[in-house]
Image 1 (tube, one colour):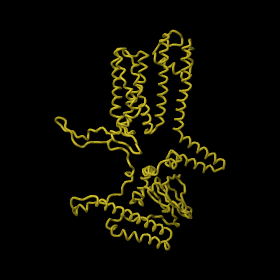
Image 2 (cartoon, helix red, strand yellow):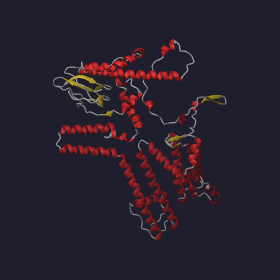
Image 3 (spheres, rainbow, N blue to C red):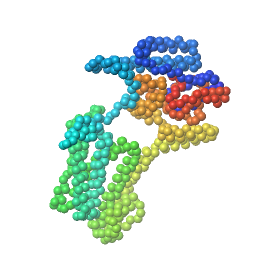
Image 4 (cartoon, one colour):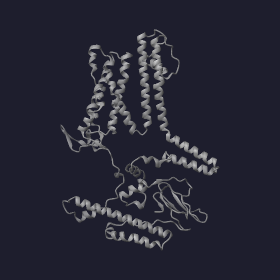
Length: 537
């Protein structure tokens, strides 16, 4: 009678059992360090011989248990050997000041198996979290410098502190870009609010200066495949860039012309040359954001709104030049001037609604230019938004296409409704768990080392549940994680049956697996939980 079994994660297949037998996994108790030192070489020489000698006489579950114990002894032997080599290296490289006492020797414990996560290199520089431990005196008291973080000597381009600073500079740039034409044309600048506006202006100028002197000169860069973290080198690299020249020009002190021509915001036009920092911020935040599609849509909307803002300023300037309310086309002088002009510019750029008919050649030229801007530039920006949304929903679209194709295929072959339901249930469950149907293909584009690091983080929780891999060496774990392939089984699925050729080993990651037996296959012989292993080892 066949023994059906359901499971979840895999590496090789399930062994068979005779009727009425309960599958058991025999695991030897951990070996002490003294026994390991005494018997390690004897185990290494006889373990393989014992496997071969027992092969001819044992069959079934006894043979599988013998193979399991032999492999466990080999793993334990290799782990002990690696530990002894590491001990010799540590003893040779260090000179102890005194001989440890017997009590200290007894207290020494063999270190646990290294956690796989430290194998993954962390690219964060310690300079970013540099905390000084000494104390510093302030008049009558002393304060530990653990509470006083020091500014890093160099900055990671993708670090949080640098991206946060770029956000501040970007906000200052957006303020200048929006307020220069608004204050120069709409006459919202009055003697009453002029001190506040000048305070905001010079605060933005101070931010520009700090950006040049403190932050941009500390940004690391890559040269010949290596990060350059020398402060002098980062300064020279920044000074050679065109961005440095643009940053200097953005601080051109045309504000001194206020003393001659009055407070005209157009003299602050060089502040617009800081646009490269605006682009850099969105590129950096796009690379680290969890939802980069939202950042891309936000940047596109800023472009659209700013073009409408410029068109509104131009329309108001045209109305002032011809005369407010001089004809039906110009601004009539009613309501809020900026809001009415923004409304007119939005209708013109998007070709929505009916605008007043131009009255002269200048107005016809203005409307023609506005319509062309709306046709080409806005069509391009709207097309970008469409592409961003399509990219964001690409995985969902592919899943829906695969589901539709699979359902249509099964209907054409007249597959029973019960089986069609199970296939749809598996597709839905896989999508909910992984959010993709092509998990194995996603990591193929990564190099082997990086793929190993990702797989180690993903499958480590599965490996630590398995007693077989408890004392494995680090190198073995790194090679092992690349062989793991996640599998999902629905409730009631049969993973393997008695008599089938087994070529895989399965590890239960989540859920329970029942070993069924009896004449009708309805007797539960055993229940395997998380961390259980079955199949061919």
